[in-house]
Length: 104
Image (cartoon, rainbow, N blue to C red; front, side):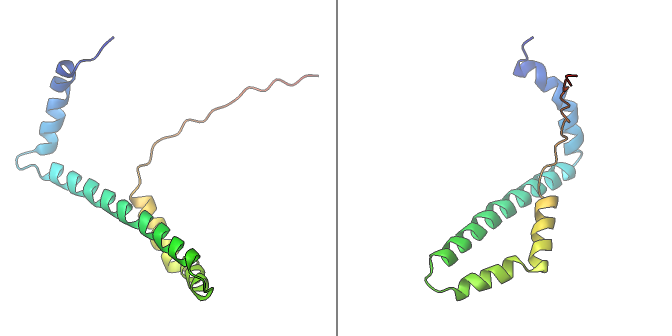
């Protein structure tokens, strides 16, 4: 069975119109949330990787100690955990059960 765009659009039209509403507030909030999530993730991960690389390339070990102190900081760990938890997409997972035969 093939689905064409012409067949799917009439099905999505009521959903999109409901989200858009009279002024499109829900759609604006959703698009702003997606933009915020994307920009935070786009900024944080490369920035941390860049800072770690700079610290590793410097000849002194004092900055390595500072980096380790910052990485072990409970405040930073909580902030990064909350950012990762709140700004990531949670997909349901399937549990795979394997049958194992036991030979007697």
